[in-house]
Length: 252
Length: 224
Image 1 (cartoon, rainbow over the protein chains, first blue to last red):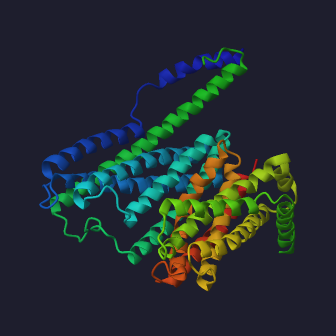
Image 2 (cartoon, one colour; image 1 turned 45 degrees about the vertical axis):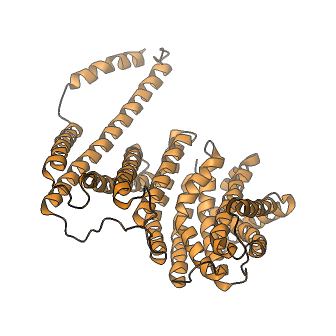
Image 3 (spheres, rainbow over the protein chains, first blue to last red; image 1 turned 30 degrees about the horizontal axis):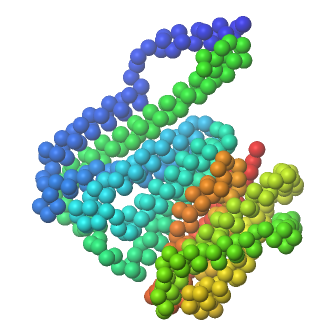
C-alpha cells in the first residue's frame, strides 16, 4: 500500500514547512493596521461636516467600499476571461473569490448608501443613476454566485460562471449610460447625489485617501484568503479521493 | 459562408416546423401576454385616458416576461431525447447553432409581439402602428433573443433552471428595457419624445456587442 504510506506521511510534510511569513499574511497585516488607523482618522481626526453632521462619516467607508466592489468585479472579469482561454483552476479560483468578495462589498455599499440617504436626502432609496446601476450590479453578481451554486459539477460551474462574469461586466457600462440618460429625461424628484464639486476639505480628502488604501489592501487580502481556502478545499478533496482509492476510510 | 448559412437556415426551419406542429410555444405565450394585461388592469386601475401614459411600461414588462417564458423552452426542448447532442455532433459550427437558435427565438418573439401589440393598443388606448415603436421592438427583441438564448442554454443544464433564466436575464437586459420604454413613450404618446436616435443607437450597440460575444461564449457552454 504505497499510496496509503505516502498519504500518511503528508501531515508531516505540512508540519515541516513550519511557520513563515507568506505574502498573504503580510497583506493581511498591512490591511489590519491600515483599517485601525483608518477608524481612528474617521472618528477622531476628520472634521464633522458643517451641514450633514456625523452621518457624513459613512462617506469614508461608502466610497472605498463601492470602488473596491468595482475592482472585485473587474477581477471576476479577468479571472473569467483567462479561465476560458487558459483553463487553469487558478483563474477560476480568482474569479470565484473576487465574485464573493464583490457581492459582499456591493451589498455593504448599498447598505451604507441607505444609511447616508435617509438623513441626508430624506428617502431610503432614490432611482438615481449610480444607485440604480449599483442595484443592477448586485443582481447580476448574485446571479453569478447562483449559477456557481446550481451548476451540475465544478467544471461546469467554472465555465458557466465565467460566461456570466464576462457578459455581466460588459453590460455594466451600458446599464450605467442608459440609466443616466433615462434620468436626464425625467429629472430626479429628490436632491441629487452628494455634490462632488471638488471642494472637499483637505483633512477629509486625506482621510478618504487613507481609507481607500486600507480597503484596497483589505480587498486584496480577502481575495487571497478565499483563494487559499479554495486551494485547501481542493487539497482535501484530493486526499479524500486518494484515501478512498487506497481502500481506507476517508474520514467523512 | 454557404457552409454557415445553409445549416443555419435548416436549423431555423426545423424549429419553425416543430413549432407549427406542436403549437406549444407561441400560442401559450400570447395567452400569457393577454393575461398580463388583465392583471395590470386590476392592479393599476387606469382611469380613461390615463392608460396611454402607462402603456410603454406595461408593454415592455409584458414583452420581457413573455420572452423569458418563450426562451425557457428553447433549450429544454433540445435536451429532450438528446436532440442537443445530435446538433453538437453534427458538422456545424457552434456559432451557427447559437445563431440559429437565437434566430428562431427572435422569430417566435416577433410573432408573439405582433399578436399582442394590437390587443395592447386597443386595451391601453394607443396606436400600435408606428415606425419608432417597430424599430424599438426589432432592436429590443434581437437583444432579448441573443441574451435569452445564451442563458437558456446555460440555465437548461443547471438545477432549478426555470428560476435561473429570469435571474440572469433581467439584470442584463435592463438597458434594453429602459431604451425601449423611452422610445415607445414617444410612439404611444405616453411620454416625452426625446433623444430617439440616441436610444436606438444604444440598443444597436447592445445588440452588436452581444452578437459578437454571445456566440463565442456559447461554444463554452455547450462543450463537454
